[in-house]
Length: 165
Image (cartoon, rainbow, N blue to C red; front, side, top):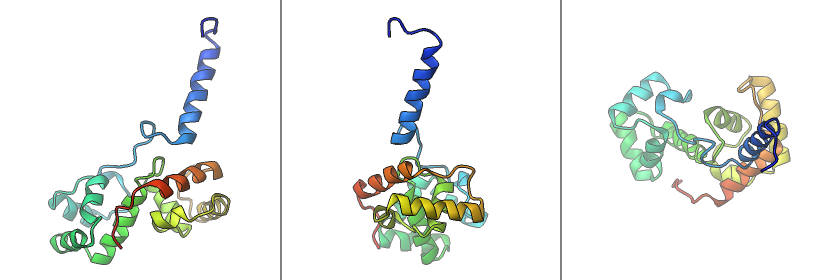
């Protein structure tokens, strides 16, 4: 880059950003959140989980991965076991780099309820469904392109299974 002018550097920086965005690298996207930052928790659930010492989606995943732990947290918080299982699938999807709470909502509205289901998807077919779902429900201003979905599907195939069904 010895003879690169000042005007071409922003282009290279933009190109690097686009590459990192498409590849979904871990340092570009945070996959876990503080519980108060996720819209899929009701205020009462948030309070109960905080009281139980669960303050982030990463900690929630650790407490709901095994069935026995999920049942224990349900008993401790008063949140139903079915709801705990639903939350388990949501936070498990957050392990995919680039998927945040809005994308979890979009994927689940499109019929992709968990990580195993995402791993079995076809990116083009899923893209059509998420576009349709987002047109109807207005979940996000950004709909992931088929290439991004393909990357997420690839990650879902390679991530270790954490949740017991």
